[in-house]
Structures are given as structure tokens and as C-alpha cells.
Image (cartoon, rainbow, N blue to C red; front, top):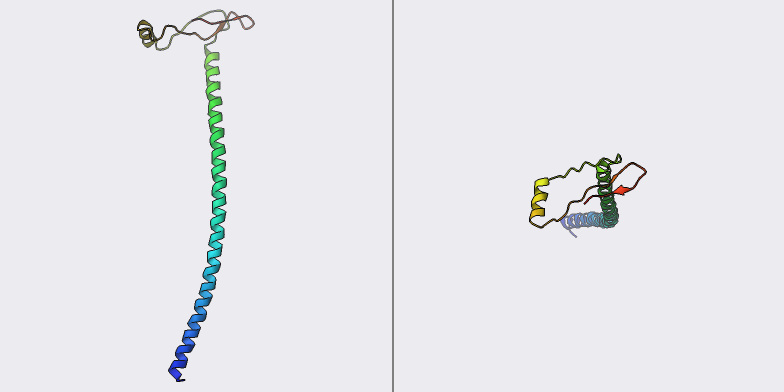
Length: 123
């Protein structure tokens, strides 16, 4: 063979070897990326599960907060000294509703004659 062909063949073999090394590295990187992708999918599923649990807990806590707020309002409006003072919020709207037969009654928070006696409610 001629010298230029030998040189070209050597260059070609060198390039082929480099390409094989590059291909090997690409295959390794591809495998690593696939593994990382699987790990990320698992982490995402775990994260979704945690978010779902937190959402349920938040909903439950919100419901409990509403119940506690209502109990607090009832306690704030409950009288324990036997004196009844009935404050009607939004009286004009409620009066107009009663006149137009939309709302026929108003309810009052319970009151006591004292802390140990009977509870009374007014309607």
C-alpha cells in the first residue's frame, strides 16, 4: 500500500476507536440518565402522595377550625348571668326578610341563669 493510504487508514482506525469510546460513554450516560429518570419518577410519586396527604390534613384542620370558631362565637354570645341582651346583626335585612316571608324566625345564642343552671334558647 502506498504511504498516504496507510496514513488515511491509520487516521480512520484512530477515529473509529475514538467513536467507539464515545459510543461507550454515551451508552453509560444513557443508562445513568434512565436511572436518574426512574429515581425522579419515584420521587415525584412520593411528592404527589405527600401533597395529597397534606391536602387531606389541611382540609381536616380547616373543618376543625370552622367548628372551633363557631364554638367560640357561641361562647362569646352565651350569657351566664341570667341577663339576656339580644343583639341582632344586620337587623334591617333580617326584618325585610321576615316581612317578605323569606325568613320567619331569628335564633339567639343560648343563655344561662348562671353557670350551673339550665340553658335557654330564644327564637
